[in-house]
Image 1: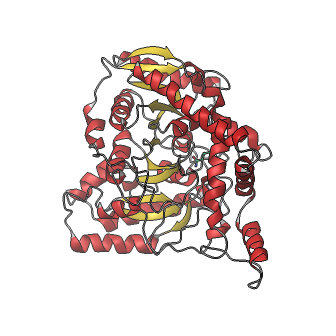
Image 2: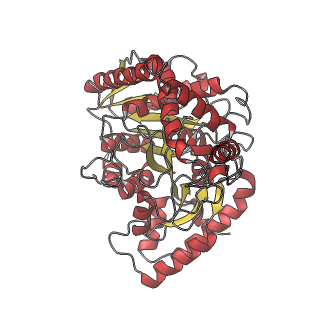
Image 3: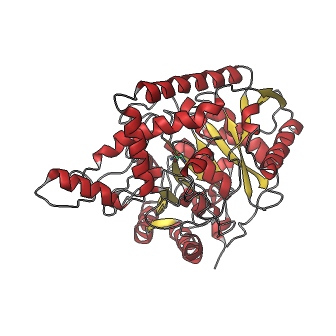
Length: 489
Ligand code: GLN
């Protein structure tokens, strides 16, 4: 077997563009790598081998690439919440087991226009609710660094497929950390852009005021290129910002040091519950930032500690509303008698949804019920505003913030099976950014001293300053040792 799969996305893209490789050759290399690694990691729900081969042949027939085809012939995977025309899209739920979308999500359309090839639809927590990919109906995905451990979640299949080098990049979605946290646990780069930067049209909704689609890749430059391709205005998503898209690849390439930059360490992120080996790896990256010329200062986010509670009330409330559409009439599964709408509705939703999704629907419906709306929903919405104000204040005096992405490294399967509350608390370091709508990038900063598992650090920026955080991450990445091949394969 050749080792084409070990190249970075940008390197394979360049070789393809120069005509040194053919798309079909690259697709075969990725399919071979997927066949070799999938029995161990189970990253994919649906492998699109036939479609990928056909797409490669079509590109070759129409080639060479045009300047707009920035990903010509590059195989990527997609979290299975992104609608793909003619290819089953399940959200890892029994509810959508046989759902074949009649259209592509906006980001999928953008990828195809850029010449990317879809290799597989990847596993996730059901409807993106979870932090370990264990709530999927279909498979248990393993972390390529240690197959007895979770890859994180909910975009765990995307992160595992990228870390295992099945594909050069992937798209995930991040409602409370689902790109950044699995990226951290699998040793990848993940970007959640500002709320409104990327269209969610055709992305299966979880919490609509939080959801962002974004890239996972093996380097900052690779993730930046993917973001350049998918970002931009789309009138089909009412929350999509109508503003120009900067060239993120250029900022990933431009930044060589951090001279003159002020970087804040939000005290609250570095306190409670942080595993010592995670803290140590992240502090070493902070030292690297210093050595590159950055000034480091401590900042504070006083309402940080209310984030988990506010997020789980608001996100569950939105989920309960969004998931009302799965009624057995319009989408997906239908169970129960055809003659009784109430029984059919009950049977469909009882059988179609898993335990965690039902828990969220119950929590959300409760928080929105008339007697409790003010006590829970309104209060959480107020906290959300205070959290944003804290960030704005901190970022007024700093160019960006540095903070760990997950309090712990990848954990063993089943560790939080009967303890949903503790697993919710594990999102404490990522979900504030979704409450505030700010951009964050998770960067691998090394292997933890004891567990030898990857650690990720977030670079957090001002609203719509993806350029800033990508530049900082690129400079840090260049100054730090690479993680190398995942050790669990
Ligand atoms: N773990 C969080 C949740 O379950 C975040 C998930 C996500 O970002 N999709 O809500």
